[in-house]
Each structure stands twice: as structure tokens, then as C-alpha cells.
Length: 415
Image 1 (tube, rainbow, N blue to C red):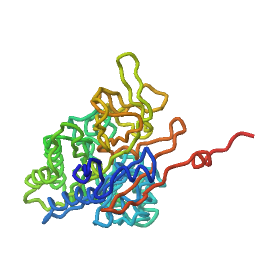
Image 2: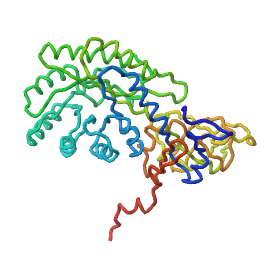
Image 3: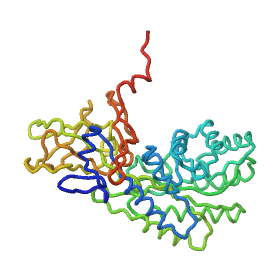
């Protein structure tokens, strides 16, 4: 996390001490670095120089408008999975013409919204979706640009909840079905075939699954060419992993170099859908120790953040580094479970952590820029945390802390 570092014995985001942010906005609080977002996005752009390409940031990873606007200003495209995410991209100044619409459950309303916006491509995942999109496009007197998302039956070697490329997963269509659907799509007046799409999972830490899937997809592209069906773009999805603890995922440049080698001589626009690798290590969550409690020999640090703020440890058994914002030289190093106040035994941010901490200390949960706030909830009627974007020595409140009035205002008691 290059743009989060210790300066004068306290953790800073770019040029801003995290203690200052905690004092101003309270805890828990998410903090993102603009410089980190830009650095991670540009790593893809630099690796793709000289190649026809489109980098579409996966909005689901972190959909805050400030984050999206940083990427839109860099010329990013966007991978969306709902009409709400399309609305966010547009509100952040993103170009709908650079939007890819993925997902297995697109509604007719969402399809119409995307067609009216003029998005770049629909990643279609079933025959029924293709038929519905064709009918809707014909009603509007236009043609819908389409790629089929194929499921190559490749093991992504990641957590089963975020693996999407095996035949037992709900995503995509089989290779055999894809051939049939492409032949069907050729004769649909409302469909324009422009590409093929494949996304096999998230937090991939090896090139091998990417390249294995690519080999299978290229066989499909060749088969379609023999049938007279031209493919203009190849979408290899996203899912490149990041370092949370001791993982050693390839850098974007390393992965893309291997992909470009396999595509040598082919006239295909390369589309990628990175999310986690752009924003995960561009953010932390601040939380304060409220109480240190022991049950026999077991020691707990109860903090003011909880599983409703970051559900990844409970849901995926994910390990996220937890560090003191200001190292405490007066406290002994001891082993703690870092837990929250939510009424669940699964409410933990980290277990078995060696820390020197005391009541009132400020902690940072690292690598919290992806799939953290985006998956947060109001469980136990807890207000969701604010999000702050740091730009050099400037601090931008990207989303204010929720209030109970915000939550209760959506509901009506029975008379």
C-alpha cells in the first residue's frame, strides 16, 4: 500500500495523518487514496500501450462516486452489473459508450436503460436474455451490441464464493451452447455481435487460470470465424488478485504481456474488467479500540467497527492486515481477536493478531478499498461509515456518515 505509510510515528494517507481524519469524521471511517487509484489504473494502461484496448473498472468493487470520478477522468471504461451501477457511472461523469453490462439477472427495465444510454456492450449470459434483448432492441429500432459470456470450465483456484468459471457456477454459457447462441444471434435483427467475454473469478494469484481460459476462448473465436461470424473484441474479464498477506499475484503488466503474446497476429480489441487490483490497496478502514476483554486466556479487542462494515473476514474467511495508526510503545505485545459489537460470534475483523494496543487506540484495517464499504449493511441498525478520499494534503468527504434518521426515514410504522 504505497500511498499509506508511517511518518513521524503515525500512519498517513498521502500527506494526511489518519489521526486527523479520525478526529474530523469519527470512526469507523473508510479512507481512500486518489494517488493509489490512479497508479493502479495506469499500470493497466501502460501495459496495454500500442494495443487496441478498453479497461473497464468493475464498479461492484467500490462504487463511490468520488472513486468513479477519479477513474472517469483518466478515461476508464466501466463494468456494471445493475442499472443502479450505470446510474452511478453517469453521475460520476463516466462515458456510457465505454460501459460493459455484465450479470446473469438483467431486467427488461435495466436493458432498456442501458440501450437508451448507448452502452458499449452487453455481456449476455443465456439464450433467454439474448431473446429478450433482441426483442427490446427491435422495439426501439436499434441493434444491441453483444458479447456472449462463455464459461470455460476453468478452476480459478480462489475461494469458491468468488469463483465464476466452472460449469457448476451460475455464470455464462458453456462453449457448446455459445456456438449455438452465436449462430442464433446472427439472424436476430436487434442484435449486433461484437465480441466474446470470459470472467473466471476474483482474487486470482496466478497467470495460469487466465491463460488456460484464454486458450479455450480463442478456440471458440477460431470456430466462429470458420462459420463466418466475426469477433471484434475479446473481453478476458478481471479478477487479478492483490496482496493481503503473503500472496504473490502477478502485476498487471506481467499478466497482460502474457495475454498479448497469445494474441499476437490477431486483430482483436482487448477488454479487461479489473476491480480489486485497482482499489483494494487504495483504501483502509479506521476503527478505534473501545474495550479490551479477556475470557480466561482468550483476549479480545472490541472495536467500533463490525461485520456490517467489513464482512469479508466473516463471509470469505478473508485475512486483512490490522495495524496501529500510532504504535503504542507503552503496551505489551499480546494476541487479540479483533471483534466488533454486532451480536454474532462471526463478527470479527481479525483473529489471533499480535498487537501492542490499549483502550482508545486507533487501528487501520488495510486493503479495505474493495468489497468492503460496497458490501456493508445496516445490520443491528448500525449506520454505515463515511468514506473519505485523500488527494495530496486535501481531504474530500466522499460520503457522509449515515444517521438513524436516514435509516428510519425509509420505513413507516403500522398505525
